[in-house]
Amino acid sequence: MQSDASTSHQHVQPPKSPIVQDNLQKITAFMAKHQIAGLPRNFEIVYEAMVRRNAEIARDLVALGAQPSQIALDHLGLKHRLVSHCGLADEHVQSEATAALKRLAEQVSLGLLRKQTFTRALETIVKSIREDETRGLSEILEELDFLDSAASDLIREETEIEFKLKAGLEQIEAAERTAEAARSMVLTDRLTELPNRIAFMNRLESLYEQATVPFGTAMLLVDIDNFREINRQFGDEAGNRLLKRLAAVFRKTIKKYDFVARIEGDDFAFLFSDVGATEAQAIAERLRTAVENNLIFATEQGRSQGSLGLSIGFAMTADAATPSELIAHAESALATARATPRHPIAGYGSEPQRGMGRNVA
Image (cartoon, rainbow, N blue to C red; front, side, top):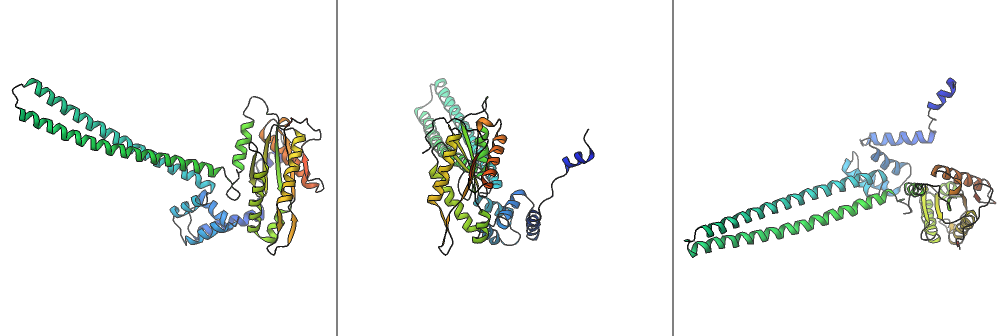
């Protein structure tokens, strides 16, 4: 039986840091002052502007003035592709597509009704001609003129319905493209345009959906050395430019079927298939060399600060039964790499695995 202290420990949440508490208070005070509804998507806008210091969002938020409408806030969130607003866009697109389908169904029903009316009129006239042989030619011509006029009206209405059907289908296709773009936003990092943490977790979990533990895939975690110090000395905008350039180097360095994502701050994650530990080590060294050769960090005055340093930890899927275990192994290796600056690349475990013959050059 557990002691009271142990039981109590399980239910007590760790206290928030003073910085987190201060940020929450600032955001809450700002939203209250400007009478912004306490919705999660509104919180994200203010958080991006005040805490993450996104200058563009901050300017747009200020431009809305005091007591901004919810519609204006939602437009701002969609403009900057905030995650919480992408779902809102998806719902809006689905609503538009449903409305378009209803309008199309009404047009089709109306067209069928008009066809049925014309058919009944035609049947009535044909029947009357057959049953009354004494009818004069002039009466028959009048009825034929009526049918001709009705047929012309029907053709015109059918043409209008065809036009409306095409327009409705184009609207639905546009809505589908918008919905797909909204879903893509949820999986894309706004700053670097690389896949984000959600996309990375989806990719990683798909590896473990098989009946057996996946073999021959390496996960690499990459961290920029002293990135907080860079931000502190040169500002967030300089740090953001650095992250964009680093993402570009990574994108050019990996191969077509490899995967890279920015998962948080200055942390990037990679997945390389068909490799062993030896190849993973070589890939990590190649990534670090590519950054050293292609990314020189300089101040605004142009003074070079030398090449950018990276710490890299890697782990193999063969050693992990679940995605969370693989992440824990990679994080452990990264911690080792950070703690040993002279050896900034570390793999989980000490026993090297046999390579699988992949060319990593």
